[in-house]
Amino acid sequence: MKRNWIAPALLVLAMSGACAKPHAAKPAPPPKHNYVGFDLKPYDANAHNPFEEGMFVDSASIVRDGDMVGFDVLRIVGALDKTPGQIVLHYRASCGWRDISETSGRTPGRTELLVAYSKESLIVDEACAGRVKAAQGFASVEGVIAVPANVPPPPMIAPAPTFARNPDKPHPPWMETPHEFESVYGDDRTGNMLFLDRASAAREGTGITGLSLVLLGEDQRRGGNYTDVAVLRNVRYDCAARTMTITAEAGWNKYGTLIDVFDKSSAPRSAAQSPVIAAEIGAACSPAAATAQQFPSVMAAWAFARDRWPASRTATYAQCLWAHLPEGRRETYLAGNLKTPLIAHEEQAGLFALCAIPESPFPDAMSALARYAWSRKALAETKLDENALLAAWRAVPLQDRLRVAAMQMGQADGDMNWESDLMSGLARVLDYHGDRAALLHYYAATAGLDVN
Image (cartoon, rainbow, N blue to C red; front, side):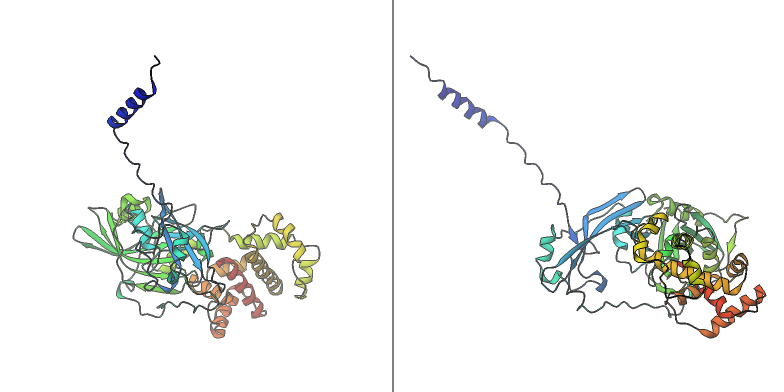
């Protein structure tokens, strides 16, 4: 008789299945994206700052790498055909310097110092402190644009956002004290510098209060008219806990114009977050060195920092292009024929490759070349030694040099009387009796090249 092996086998399998422990369900992987507002809360289309319209922070992208924090921002762009566009911007910020750059392109974008009103400040504060906790937001771009209120109107019909600045606001008392700025930390790679104002230091319980000044290095040159590149901060240092809390700030743009004054406290920053913060707390809680060099004003400290920068990259590009212009082109320009292009369109690629100019700053390099050519023509008209001209210029207070740059770049109203007085003073230093217009043209072009 044939045995039926199938039935017992099925019985064993059934029994073994009944006795086996069920497998624990694997936890769902974290979402690849979590689009929220800059406050790390669900995006509220009716409550955001106008500059945050259609912008969503991807909290899942926030990462800390040493002193740096990186994160992505999704920007939704409205369109007339009702199909919104999307752009992903990547940002990198430093915990120590609290500077931030948009790095999505092939070359770094504008760099600025974060201040109280900066929309990215909370993200950087939380990431540097290691405590990012974001609310649940949208898990996909499709989820974002599925909500009509999240999609801004097309740029050409959207009203331009406005933001109230207060450059004419009277200086608060904490800014008006005498200063003794001492350099306590610097970054040789970027040129960033940190100063403490020893004159403002005061004991407060177990801590110290006082002013500190943070200056961006060469990245200032990529700043705009409303970009903070120098920030004076009123700070409370807890020497025992080794923390610092900013209680008020004032910011200047690259032209030396005060653009922001804010009385708003930051979250405490710990020395453990960054060597820059540790150095600031350590210096504030220690006496000044007897031999330390001190500066009596923001501009004096700023000038000290600027003197250590390399030459402007766009100025270097301009000098190279000028030196390699086709034969006769420089002579034609200097003779007064300003209608002939310095570089024809078909010549650009070859000359730019020769001068190792990356593709993205093409317009900057061409503008710099025009400015440099203008300075060469003015120099020829003055018949002065350029080293003497530059030495006299460097002796001019930084505030005045930056004002000339702002006028040259169209970022400040011209003042003919002021310009005339400045050129008269320089002419006396140089013992120059020629055309003052040529002198002004040379210095205006030089200032414009140096600030960009």
